[in-house]
Image 1 (cartoon, rainbow, N blue to C red):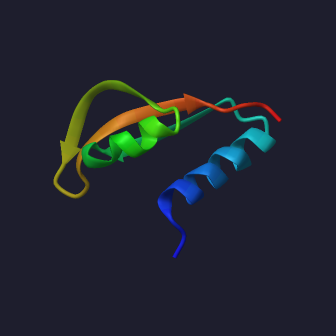
Image 2: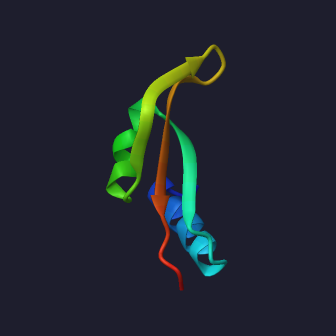
Length: 65
C-alpha cells in the first residue's frame, strides 16, 4: 500500500512536470491537516453530501520544473 503523503507528492510532481499551475481537491474535513502540511489552502466553507460526507475545497500551486 502507498502512504497518502507519498502518493500526494507523486501527484504534485506529476502535475508540475507537465507545467500544471494549480492542483485542486475536495478533501474530507478530517484530512485537511494532511493537505495543509503539503501547502494546500482551504477555499470557502465546508460542504457535504450523503455519499462523501463533509468536504472542503482546497488547492495549492505547483512548482514548474
